[in-house]
Amino acid sequence: MMKTRIIAFSVIIQLILAASYTAYPQQNKILIESELQRLKESFSFANELVTAFGNREARHLLDDAKRSIDNATEFYRLNRLDRAKYFILQAYRSIQLAMKITLNLSGRSLLEQLQDLIRQAEQAVEGTDNKEAERLLREAKKNLDMARTAYKNQMARETFEYYRIGTFLAKKALSLCTDRDKNTKDQFVEEKQRFEQLLQKAENRLAENPLKEAEQLIQNARKLGHQAVQAFQSQHYREGIEHYYRATRLLLRAIEYCESQATGSDPKNKLENEIQSLNDLIASMEPKFADTKNVRAKMLFEHAVRMRSEAQSAQESGRYRMALRKSELARNALRRGIQMLESKNQGLSEQINDKLIQLQGDLERTEELVNNSNNREARHFVELAKEYYDKSANASQNQREGISLQGILLAHRLLNLAEDLVMNEGALEIDKNQVEARLKEFEHTHSEAQADIESSKDKRASQLFQQSSHLYEQAKKAFEANELYFAMNVLELAFAVQQRSLRTIR
Image (cartoon, rainbow, N blue to C red):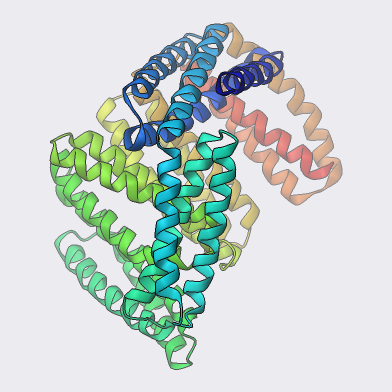
C-alpha cells in the first residue's frame, strides 16, 4: 500500500512538471527555480522530521535527496533544465520515502504521547473555569483527530504538523492552569517592564555607537510606549499591549544596528549579539503567538524556535557562520509570523512603515555580504534596491501606498538576486544573444503598452509603467557594459512590472 502511494505521488509530480515545462525557455527556468525552492523547503521539513524521529534508513534516503538537490541546482546554473528536472524528481522520491518510513516507525507512538498530554491538560483544566485554556484544549483535540486521520491515510507531513500543533496547544492549556493565572492587565504590566528594560539597553548601545537609524527607531519606540500608557489609563489594556509589542520590535532593531556596527564582521562576536537579540525577540513575541488562533502563524513561531535551538547548537560547536544562517532563518520565520498576526490589526500605512524598517535592515545585511564578495554585478543589484527603497519611502510619505509597496517588493527581489549571485560564487551563464533578443522584445511590447496606458489615463498604471521603463534602462546599460546576469534579471523584472501596469487597466 505504501509503495503504491509513493509511486502515485511520483507520477503526479512527473505529470505536473512535464506539463509545466512546455512553456518558453525563460518561463521554464522560472518554473525550475520555483520548484527548486519548494523542494528545498520540503527537504528542510523532512530533515527536521528524520533527525527527531527517524532511523538510519530514512537518513540515508535524505542523504540521497541532498545529492539530487545539489545536482539539480548545478544543472539549473548550467541552464540544462531537463537534467535539473530529472534530479528534482529523484529528490522528491527520496524525501517522500524517508518521510513514510519515519511515519511508520514513530507515528503511532507520537499520537499516543499527544493523547496522554491532552489527558493531563484535561485534568488540569477541569474545574478552573479558564475559558482560554478550554478553547486551547478543544483545538488540541481537533489536531489530534486530524493527526490520526492523516496517519491512517499515510500522510506523513500532515501527521507530524498536526502532532506538533496539538502538542503546542495542549502544553499551553496546561501551563495556563498550572502557572499563576495572568489576566490582560497582568500581561500589560509584564510587557511594560520588558519595554523599559529594552529601552534602557537600546539607549546604552546608542550612546556607545551613535547611529541615525537607531536613534529614529528609539524615538518611534518611545512614542509607542507613550501611546501604550495612554491606552492603559483608558483601561484599553489589549491595545496597550499591542503598542508595546511594536515598540519592542523597534528597540530590538535599534540594538541590532548598534551592535552590528560595534562588532564589525567578526562572526563570533556578531553571533553572540545576534543570538541574544533573537532570544529577546522570541521572548517578547511568545505571548502573542500563544494567544492567536492563526495556525500558520503558530507553525512559523515553532519553526523559529527550532532554528534558534539549532543556531545555539552550532554556536556551541564553533560553527559560527552556520549558526548565523540558522539565526537568520529563525528571524525570517518570526518576521513572517508577526506580519500574519499584525496585518489584520494594522492600517496600510503602518504595515508599509514596518516593511520599510524591515527592508532597511535587509539592505544593510545584504550590502555587508556583497562588500565582502567584491562582486560588481551583485553590488549593482544592491544599489538599485537602495534606489527603490528611497522611492518607496517618498511614496509612503505622499500617501501613494500602492507604489510604495511595489517599490518594496522590487527592492526585496533585487536583494535576493544579489545574495544568490554571491552565494553561487559568480554569475550564472547567460547568453548575450538571448539578452539582446529580450531587450528588443521589450522595446516592441513597451511601445504598444505605452499607447494603451496613455489612452487609459490611469494614474497607477502610468506610475507602474514608469517603473518598468526605469528598469529597462538599467538593464540596457548593464547589457552595454557586458553585465549579462544583471541585465537579464532586471529586464525580467521590467517585463513583470509592465504586465502589472497593463492588468491595472484591463
